[in-house]
Image (tube, rainbow, N blue to C red):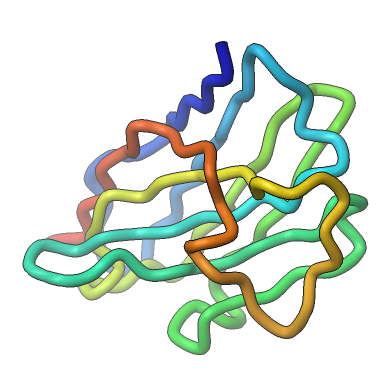
Length: 128
């Protein structure tokens, strides 16, 4: 059974940091683009960042550029989102997802419709 599980969410003050982790079971993440998405209350789910199958290319939403870093460890079957200088507007449920297509090329951005395996999400709250 394909499964993704996020961890690392929580409550943090503005300016603080959190590291989100995504662990896969039932399949290997090798050769699948991985992405992090988020959904704030009352808003549509949006893409935050994606990483190519080798980890050599990453893309970020403008709102998180310079603050968030996505990475992956194919040997450990995990993906990570390091979030620094967090802002109240980063408050959301964060989801990791795996691409539906084996060895897809990561272009200039990632589309939610391309991702077929999703975790349950982890809450990130940025508040003083």
